[in-house]
Image 1 (cartoon, rainbow, N blue to C red):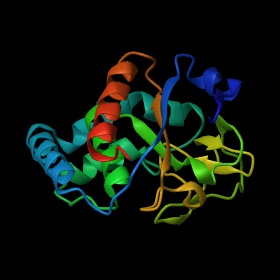
Image 2 (image 1 turned 135 degrees about the horizontal axis):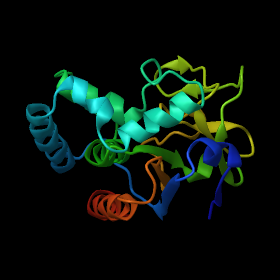
Image 3 (image 1 turned 120 degrees about the vertical axis):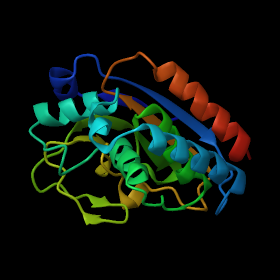
Length: 211
């Protein structure tokens, strides 16, 4: 079991920060048509009800952006993943189909507006701590190359950085071969809503990825 801790550097800018974590065995698959139908249905409804300029004010997205600002990071340049997903939907750009686990995490993020870290536990070395990114700290963001994480909230294991609210790292990413999942739901808005989001995620995991 991976232990997770939070640096005082985070509480200094976000005293109400809270998180929940799910660590479980999973059976990943390349694609779940039923899950994708859920994603499509939610996406169509959300796009019909939400204006682009409203997204950065939505609960959980707004508070994550505020944490970025307090740490000196521009949230318009380094958007939290939940915001980026919501914007993509409203702009009519199809979501990428990655694999069932990643698609599932994206749905939880879309519905709850939390930025969520998803990691292959077998690739995580030691315990994990949430701190703040340093200048020139190495971070290869999934699908986007090297990312400047200075001033971003960042999870690190014994080797180095593995996840930020903007993107996770290539080294510990979820693949079709992943069988041990660590999912961290980050509440920069505090505890309110975290339990419901966690239960929703557990339900999807049991439905779509139970071994």
